[in-house]
Image 1 (cartoon, rainbow over the protein chains, first blue to last red):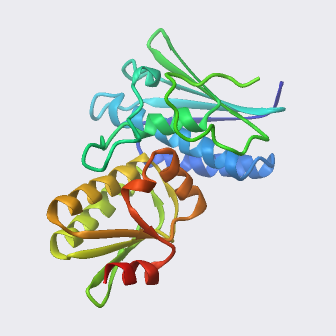
Image 2: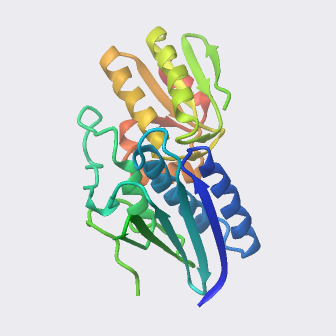
Length: 157
Length: 110
């Protein structure tokens, strides 16, 4: 059951991410999940919003992105809804984080970070909207063993 | 974000803060690239960055590739714990020479 919620509507500009970060920091301080959980949630949301804002829309098109965050007893659930082009981050393979400098891909780390830091990631396309669900369990300050090779994160417990 | 460039002997130190993300990475990259073009030994002092996203990782990885190709020496120093964690999960720690602070990094590159 949700103990507290925050709702935010952002426009599709990168500068809006800072507004979301500030709002989550306030929310985290008020409901005392500050620290690792709020840092990881902020980073995961930054990564997905940077993707949506940078690649989701025709250049110059204005749109809104909705972010709903619910604090439950043992987890934080974030839902991101945007009307950009269909984009399922779970479709993208993780970069090989074991390669040498010369062979390293320079991109793809954002989605890798989301998958690694979140305990559950789920995507669906609903009509003209992308819906992404991110879940971060509380009381679990360790990352999921660092390097994730799985295609998607699974809920714990 | 204001990027500061200073010099200690033959080593140039690039320092900035507080967030290296999709909003700030382009300006930082531009400044860093100019330094790499002109200087043989570069330390990026990360101590004022409390936040690095994949946009920042990208800039640092491209800088490392550029330094390798141009035969420049590059070191990072002063990674904060959250930033160190982002480097760790992205497999970036083995790609860089990383030191505790600028003194150590400058000594190593001098």
